[in-house]
Length: 406
Image (cartoon, rainbow, N blue to C red; front, side, top):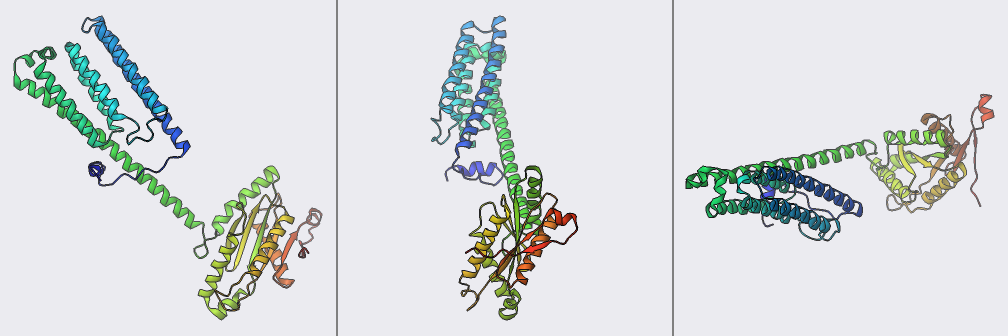
């Protein structure tokens, strides 16, 4: 566990979730983010160089400092940018190399303070920028170590290098003023670091909470569109799928069919074996059908022992073949594990969607076809055939029984 408790405590008592293996797309996105961050670092260095150029014009810093600072900044961008973008750091514990980047930048500021003590205050300010950058990516424990090292380096500079007294004349005259400067800078830096980490922790926690709420909302929507007993879609889950298929039919002429499936003599199962057994039969039937449907098909419980099967991109003949295959599957299944000597069969009515259909009329035609199958003796499939000429003459819909092939 190590010092993970420190980050957990700082995040408000919540441990960050374990990192999951990244997909290739996620790795590409992460590299783009790193490239973006490298660009921001480059812009920050560009601002520093612009400020140093002004100091150079005023005679406060030598030209050699400006050139060396530019060289070190460019080296930082090239070295760390190449390591990250190449993927060479992916297997490291901290692939962003944040600690090393901070150490590089802080060493540049300390060196610049020694080289140009007259403007050392500016480089002290840049340290705050460096620590703000580190707070975005560095574990809190590592950041605290970096803070302690930086504070120690500043204290050493104050006592060992009198030229830093150019920052303020009082620094040359009083040990207490030097101590106050070191302690003041150190505590300011620590407070800045702490606030940055706290803000990042709160942001991370709010992001996790938002993701959790989104997942719960998605689960609630899933429950609202699923039948609680069988796990199949319910009417609310089926309705938008039907409307989408009808819109696709009107826009592109894509075939779609629905089948109404009803368990034959299901009332006798409930009356003879009890409703709990009937429920087990319903669940087992749905599991069986789900195991033999195409990926695009959708099964919904319409009510009681009736189910609707939506078959996108399927013409009537193909839909009848699918319905017949499912009918044979149910008839040939061994149901004795549920009820001894149980023989289960289904009747199925199939209707093909037409541009003028609404969801209600399409379901109604499939339902009429189902009753045709029942009237013909049950345990069979029927298709509802609608002819435009018959509709124009207001002749009622006809049912055609398609006999089993072979």
